[in-house]
Amino acid sequence: MTDIPLIRLADVSKVYHLEAGDFTALNHVSLDIMEGEFVALMGPSGSGKSTMMNQLGILDIPTTGELYISGRNVAKMTNLERTHMRRDAIGYIFQNFYLIPLLSAYENVEYPLILKYKKRDTTGKAAAVLKSVGFDEQMSSHRPTQLSGGQQQRVAVARALVNDPKILLCDEPTGNLDRKTGYQIMDILSGLHKEGKTVILVTHDPKIAEYAYRTIQLEDGRIVES
Amino acid sequence: MRDIFFDLSVRSVRLNFMRSILASIGIVIGVVAISTMGMLGTNMQLETKDQLSAGANTIVITPDVVRMGPPESSTTSSSSSSTVITKAQLSKIKLAAGSNASAIIPIYSTNTEFTLSSTPGRGTIYGIDPDYITKFLTIENGTNIVGANDALVGSTIATNFDLKIGSRIKVGSSTSGSRTEVRIVGILKERGMAADSVSTDNAIIVSDDWYTNQYGGKDEYPQVNVIVKNIDTITDVEEAIDAKLNTNEKTPVIRIRDASSMLSNITSTLSTMTTFILAIGGISLLVAATSIFNVMMMSVNERVQEIGILLSIGTETGEIRRMFLYEAFILGIIGAVVGGIGSLVIGYSVVSYMIGTTDYFFQPDSIVYIPAGMLIGIVVCIISGLYPAWHASNMNPIDALRSE
Image (cartoon, each protein chain N blue to C red):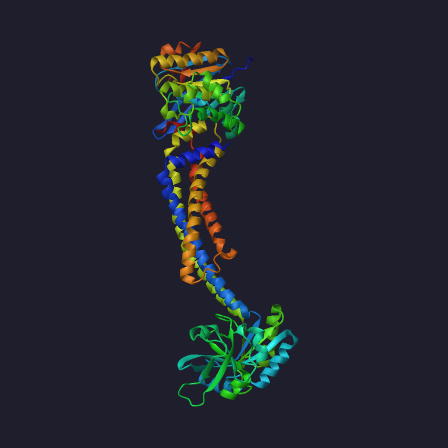
């Protein structure tokens, strides 16, 4: 680990230009997240959590201010560089799983490997990662619609992990799961944190937030507690 | 192993099988239309060319008898033009053509009635020096004219009247008393529409001596054919003859034409026709393109969230474009393959029905329309998929993810 923060937001604002007028979703936010941290991002609806996650996932760039990931200013990267960073450095876990419906469970996990190496996986890595998150091997040829919510989220976690990213962005990962399955997923994430991953978790649920070692409270686009 | 984006496209087509097939039918129709129309036109051209090219090295010289001017000018021109080519003019032609000509063939001809064992018929009778006959006509059966009363007949007459070597024909009107009989010594090969204006299929060929004995007009030829040694010199020879005989530009005495100008006229007319009917086929492909575009846009719009997922986890925009172009390509391939098979069957039937022969169907110039039509079908599909693919790859991943 180095002293340089893995993620640095320096006076970041995000303003959406809507018909009704400008809407400031993030208002001069500054924040450092070090490698290996487990951070929970909390706040009421409309507080800017999703906008923050979009920034951290470099799906979007700040209107003003600067965002650095692994020391690189994302606003100065090309579209292709940002795409490659999303592919290689960041793993996404969504509330709605967002698996690719036309691919099997196995292929969903294999997909990021194909994106990275431009060929089908012959190393067995996809299968190994799928197994490591406790996914039943016999169901790996099933399509997402044939899987339960918990199984889908395990596939999604495996997909997020397969390219060995430094950062795991988890947007309400338990939001669509029953309590028991939710905790199982959180145990997996907790284990990954212990293995050295930087985990950033958005949640409404204080119980789930307790897994994190640091909680950031957002309100009206500002950090009120960190 | 296959490209995952190709797999995704195949699965998308399979998922919307009915819709995809219906869109492909448009391409099938387009490919069949283009290929069939193209083959029809080409077969027509090939057949005509084949029939005409027999006399491609021949210059046809006829008296310039058509006068379409005001009456006062016709009096002046009548002095310089006549309805036949005279002996003097023939000598001039021989002089002008010189060593470039392999044969200069004066041809007598007229229409006549004839009777074959009391069945009357009508056709052309040609009087040609027997030595020249074999220079441009092919005797399929029998021999050339030797005796004074020997004659050759064209294939149509031979078939219609069931003529054999040795059959006899009475030439002349059945009411006329002075009818002479000729004996068939040979039957000519089918010639079709000949470029050298000697259409023998429905004709009787006799020696020039027999002809002038029967009809008179010795050394007054309605037509002289010059066969050149080298086809490349045909224009030079024509110019030389023109310069020698048509000394007065305003009142030319002879008319000179050759198969190449006739051939190029007919070919250009036919190729205009081919282009026109191809354009009709093209319209059907345009309609097909619209339906492919529509299906591709539907596919993109139904998969917005999926595109959002793909983009957010690091899929390059080029890879998204490729996925949708593959889909268009698959629709094109389905349409093109079915269309290609359809073109073979339908094209063959149409050509057989419309032209009456499929001799030219499998010639490269004709059959090439099938792969060409298929290729055009695929290209049209890919072009139709360009905008939808571009649209998909340029989506904002955040907005795309949010859409349900």
